[in-house]
Image (cartoon, rainbow, N blue to C red; front, side, top):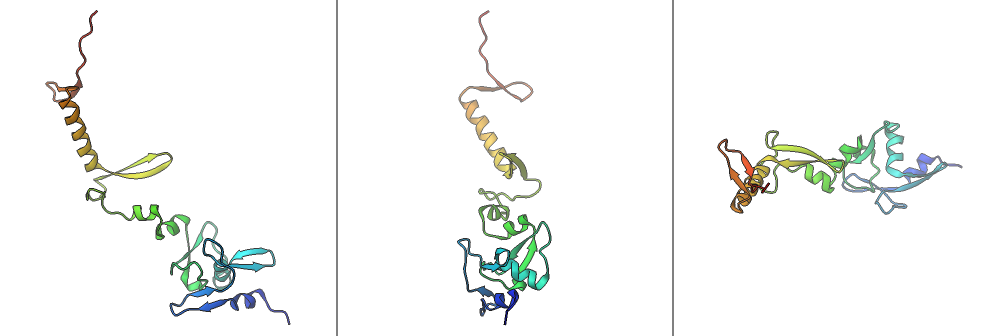
Length: 164
């Protein structure tokens, strides 16, 4: 008697106390289970989702809500955008985006935050830290005699007169 791919699939899981359906067969280096289908190897969690909920919508990927990559429980999987999946994780980028204060303790509020692009990526800068750094820079170069204050209270570079 031949068994279907779905029957073969469900024989390869172990249900844990946390409700995860852990894949018991081959696990790739990244931690995801792999299942052999007639058309090649597939990620086990994707097969589980498609068997239970249908095709994964175009442009979306699956997020493990339980944070367990071996889990194939379709109730622990959610189709989300790549950005949402990354932001839910524990990557450097996700950690930084969740920060509510700069390293000096100033709030990342709309009024106190500058979004700058550098090398094709956007990052946040604290306006207050920028103001503090600018005041320190101007005080340092004024102390060195490079800047003087003119009548309009603007900073000008002292240039010695040239002999012409």
